[in-house]
Amino acid sequence: MNYLKRIRLARSIVEDFDTYPFCLPLIRSLSTVEFDSSVTFFVGANGAGKSTLLEAIAVALGFNAEGGSRNFHFTTRASHSHLHAYLDIARGTRKPRTGYFLRAESFFNVATEVDQLGSDIIAGAYGGRSLHEQSHGESFLTLMVERFTSNGLYLLDEPEAALSPTSQLAALARIHNLVSQGSQFLIATHSPILMAYPGATIYACERTGISRVAYQDTEHYRTTRDFLQAPEQFLRELLNADSPGV
Image: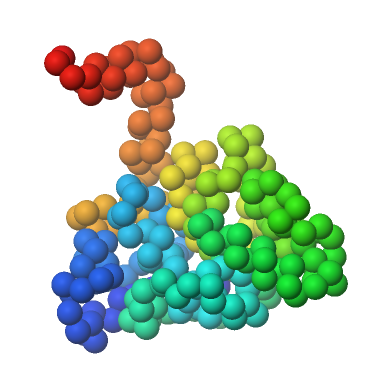
């Protein structure tokens, strides 16, 4: 039984679908999104609205908009939309023991806040070493290994941003370990490595709206597969098409 079962856009109270973020095609067409797997991915092109949706879910659940746990209340720059106020959240019968919102673009601010909380917090929940004293990728993995624990609800916005392919595989293994311990994940990603997680639900966020899609049918998988199968041909066609006078 998942902690988060579904979200629904309360369309009847939206004042104007021509204003941001309701003007985004993804949000304009949004109705109900079901979470019936332990791992759910939101995928799509840049600007599709997947991060906006994940952020709104996080804020509606009580997480800080810039990231962290529900105990984080800092604000560096209030840039999140008010979409969270229009989401109806359906929760399961269980409550998560812990949770975290990892937002790649503002993780520096979260790491700074962790430092300000003091050495006891760093020692107890973050491996005993400041996140700022690690590389970006190392700090992401430290968070997942040290701070993420069993029976948690974790929302990750583009966690692959700081991770090499090998580190993405390590993150995937950690996600699986935590799922086996009763955790649930919602992840916005561009990574064909992460979204390959077995049994995951994948929602494609497109200009026509949001829909479930099989892994092999995602643009990310197809483009990566085509490139790796014939990189020379792929690049030749791509670069010649962009060359002036061709």
